[in-house]
Image 1 (spheres, rainbow, N blue to C red):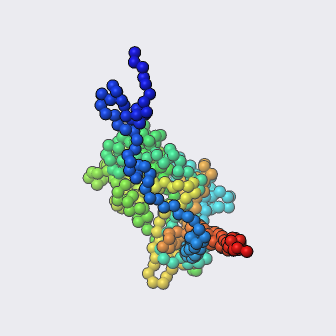
Image 2: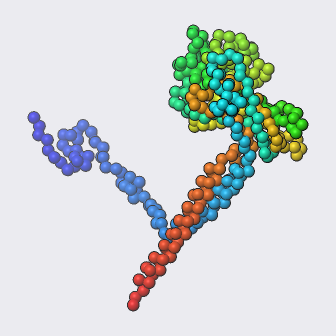
Image 3: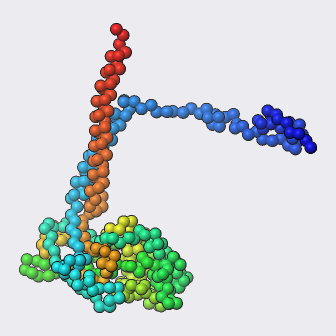
Length: 368
């Protein structure tokens, strides 16, 4: 039995005697380089009044004008919103809201009258809004099959298990599968203008161009085949809550039917918050100086197909113009103004403190 002995060289990684006969062991010390020995030159900023105070003032003078510009731009955007859920008994859609369910086969139609007190110029964007609808729920967000939506034939007949319980209807695969597609918003909104002579004219609504280009041309595709969507989807079933199959979403326009229907694509892009809006139609600007929507009386004809009272939800119509910064959103301008004001005020306070105490230190250093 051999006794072990302590050797300082062994601790440094140098083995003596018999232990060195098996080979040269590596030294565990880091190499003697500037990087490994932490001798690289370094720079540590020293915060002084001469560097900090100008930074506060510069940030304030930059952020405040930007915030004012953003806030004024947001306020110049015209927006009109009307709730047509039908909660109160005096609402035109009260009977539809109380009686309509997902199992109702006959459509319910109601009409809401409203007045625009100022004209809407340029293009007007028509949104539908929902409240208390949690599209951001984890299981809801995952309940889809992107391979199926991209036109994969194998996924069409054998959807992903993430779509459960809206994966199959009996033994037939559902297309499109999943909870997102099953809850597709399907109210029909038609807008009419009532002139001073009580003549009613329908406002033309553009239904194409409302989806993202990448969604329309990359992420969503119809199954490859002979171009007949009825044959392409013949071995599938419609979603449980749908009144018609996917190939009848817009049968008159093959470029807006099936999985590439833009209303369907817009709905499939889930919202991050429970209160959200999604683009429904575009009202294009008229030629000349005529406003797109003149001030006056309007009628909103609603085919009430989407019940929301079961989850205490609300439905609304939003008419809005846009600017270079998008839709109406005063928060960004307020945030810039707030941050700029805080920085500028801090700069003033620190300048006063620095001026006061710097004079004291200077006078204390003067010899008597």
